[in-house]
Length: 248
Image 1 (tube, rainbow, N blue to C red):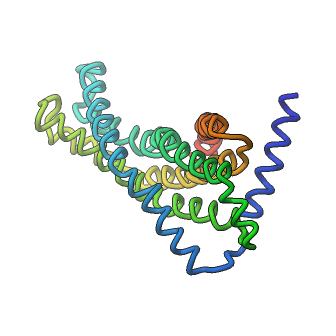
Image 2 (cartoon, rainbow, N blue to C red):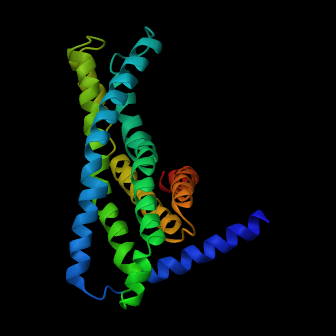
Image 3 (tube, one colour):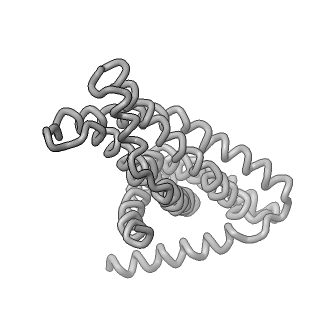
């Protein structure tokens, strides 16, 4: 029964994506929606990305310095570990998990409300492809801004680590800088960007599916929003496992 339901939802999802990726009927309206979605989904998320990344970077640096101390271990290890964690996992995977709660619920509730208030039906009556008009700008907008959010997250985490050095005096700035510069691999940054692009597509498309296919009233909109966040989180974790193995 579970497999049967999964196949039904997966088939509907593929069908909806086929409709969403059709050629926009009016490019001017598409770009207008595209800019709007970039502002609503990406730019409005910069604040929470910077805040969380700053404190996570500071906490990682403190934990590594205080709990992994050894006479045999170089002083720059804290900076090195902080950089690797921010680049490889936090700025891409964990940050996208956090954004799935904010952005995913936003998309699902917005489209679910439009469905229950028959706004989507009105677009169909007007001869507009509602899937392409509503979903495609969200997907393209989030895919456009997610590399910037990953970059901001990484730099914010590093600034948080320096805050522990200059304010908390947990580690000297010179040791932290030496750790951040030690055997830097540029591919690690690009690997995080590539993974985040997959995660951005999961968040935007899956949340859009749950919101677009809502049946019922306001209660179902809330359920769809919850299901969208849960499904996005699970898919991000599963895909993170395979993408890490593939890209490493």
